[in-house]
Image (cartoon, rainbow, N blue to C red):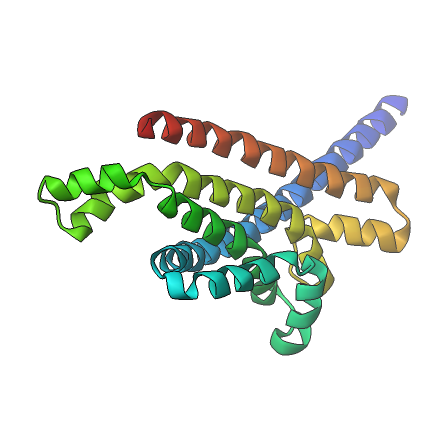
Length: 219
């Protein structure tokens, strides 16, 4: 009798732990999907915007001012503005995170392209390269490490800020934090906070390795 009771208790505990792990894995998946979607859109917007700012002196100050204004707006304020305009759910959360991720990518792209030594560009032109070849073979390869540093910064910021998406139904690990705050459940709160911190640190470490390789290749 005691053995049967012990087996049932063990099976119930194992089932509960399996359910918790599965639930955590689903929230991590949703959090990564949300972050990845926002980063892909931000890269698509931020790199061309930074390149445009770097090439056009006339609009550079205005462009950088606009980017910096977007950078200082709090993430929660962006989410609050997105909710009445776009509703709730995954894509409104993506839009809000894109607003956060574009500035570091655009700023680093501008700095990277303007930081390419003119002597290298002039030497490439002297070898008979046209402007497209100069950009493809000289300018962008030298600028890539700094551009990637902006992507790395944006990635960490997006992963950390994606927790706020739970406030407008965006899902992800922020649901643990939101539910923990609402119900006074410190365990859920701790689980969500630690999971987000681990994801951000992993992203920082992995992208840091890639950045060092890019720097070594460009040197």
